[in-house]
Image (cartoon, rainbow, N blue to C red):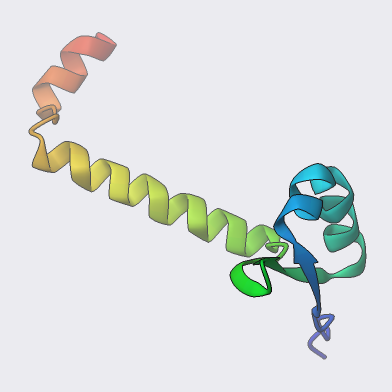
Length: 89
């Protein structure tokens, strides 16, 4: 049987409060599965929610791939022979 994930509960908080109490909101978000919509003058400006380990790994992988693609576009690549020489193999 597949485990059931906790549904996220969402709370509205002001940007000043969020900035001043970031560590608290982080701990509560992770511990209790809370997400936050941060507001500025009664207007939602962004959402903050905890990531699962899988989501975090996928985000990091996507960022690493984008960085590698940028390096290729800039010509920052090595041939197999250059890699072998650098590693001494």
